[in-house]
Length: 482
Image (cartoon, rainbow, N blue to C red; front, side, top):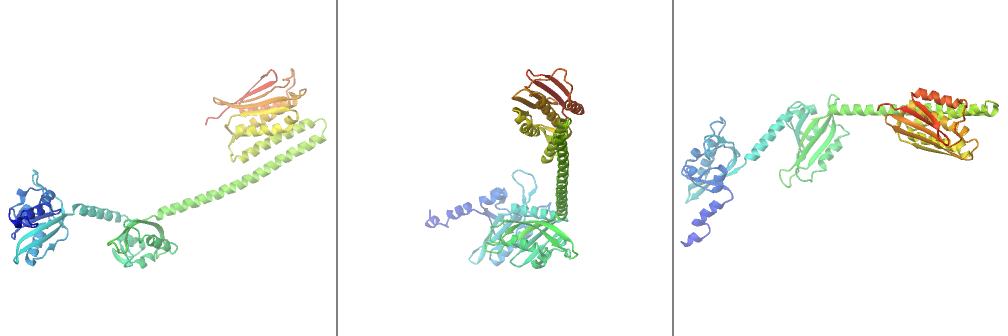
């Protein structure tokens, strides 16, 4: 082997370097006959060496006959001729140059986009070969094309618009849709950013400018978003919602902002109408609460006044004293039910278990404590309609009052149990005492008659029995379907 063959760049080294090069190269003679090609070029074009070497360039890669706009052969030939004539490299713009489908496929072409560089090889002042170097930019071009199609499609919508803000030049590139949004003559092109921002409502201008200023030093593709009003020359106010990204052309350059805006005026109007409706609802609810408070106050005062009058008359009366005291107690029971309804903020239903425990606690603190009688309550937590809760509360008041009055006359202590529980589709109310029991042949008292009337009003059933010792009353009230 000769010495110069061992030198890098000489002999077999040239072929090795050419084949191992990371780029795609094809070598042509001055007549544009292919004389060599490296493997990367073959892989990229899906060809074999025997398909290309010795073949005229434009026989190997003709124009796509199915594409009437194909001009790849003409453009490439002009570039090769320019490099040959000037003896200088010639870089081509991105070219659409479809390649034939080989690999056993009959006919057909594959869409491809290239960025070619044609470099002359000069020896002793003459061009002896041309190096054709290509970069495949098909994916990038197709992506940008599809993106442009999507953008153009989006701009066809009246409420969606594209624009580009360049702080460096103080300009905005407006699409036709954005021009229309701003109330300008419908056109596409560059306008003064100040003129465009002047259409933004005065109260929103600072926020819009801040949305851009705050990300000037941020990385590329940082998102910007804002909602603002437009005040148009005819006095119309529109709402826009904008989303965009920061773009940098060079590392040190000021950014540009690519933005899409959508007209959300109708949504804003509906939002404002809903907010107004909610404010009106809150006002009416507050008014209702005030009225309910006033009504409650008056009813409570009126009932307390009636109870007070009955108690005063009872103290003055002779024979009817007890009846008047009982009537006052009943009025007070109605007052407590009313107070419970008001405090629960419920008009139609009552938390009956909670109320019954409170009622028994009040009764226990009255005559029961003075007589040494323990009043216990075990009540399930159920919601009852007010028209059932009130009669049941009055029944409990009457039964407990009757037991205190008659069951423990000769006893020093005792116990009364009030129990409320759910059974299938009924509420069972049970009042049991361990007193002397019911006297045989006793005439029904006023309280007993009131209980019977209330039971009939509820459509309920009542059972009484000897509790040995004491007396038990069992009332079963049907529950409404829920």
